[in-house]
Image 1 (spheres, rainbow, N blue to C red):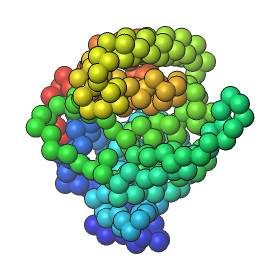
Image 2: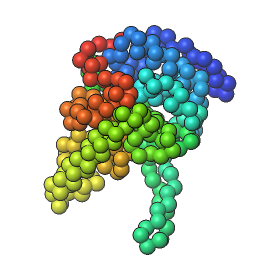
Image 3: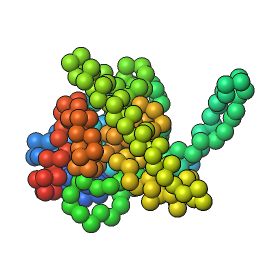
Image 4: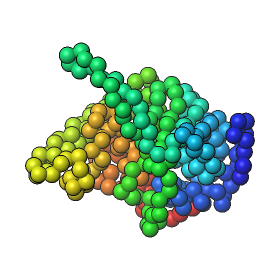
Length: 278
């Protein structure tokens, strides 16, 4: 499959292509026939309406475009492409990239530093990704429930969160769901922060909390420690778990899983239970 890099056109994602995507990305497995057909349409529409460009000498090929599009479309499977209407470009770096930041402290002093990122979603702007952090990995199990992150889902969920002009962990939704969502998400966020505090207190003083030696302690957490940054990052990290490790996420936060299932109109646990790859 080859399509012009400058002039986007409709791309037909046929069944062999879809099966290859499912093989590469476990979170795409277990969808029903109807969901698979809808995903194929969404992926084609996504690649028609969006531009995937490379940075630092990277030239995205067809498989890279398809892989990014497929993962980006999973959260909007039953929401629609209109939810990604505020941007047209996805920029892909070969690896982690630097972003210059400015931080003003409580004394009014401005500090500048380089932030090393695997992905970033800009309000009204592009989504930026590191290919090293999203390339397919060999997965032994056929089940989509894997203890792994998904930077594409993370950043595109940020886009959903930003749809009302602010990233606060609460994307636009029905009024009936919003009240329950806010109380459930904020309660889960507070619980997670408490768990993180307890883990950090338990790390022996001779071990650097930022070193690999501390990973065994952080592995006891239900989510990546980055989820404690703020409510917006908690939502994005939790959404990764919802799609990638749904069984463990439901066990850790059943109320939040229910809210996510209602918002995304999906039940990823049922895909694990069906144990099939389409």
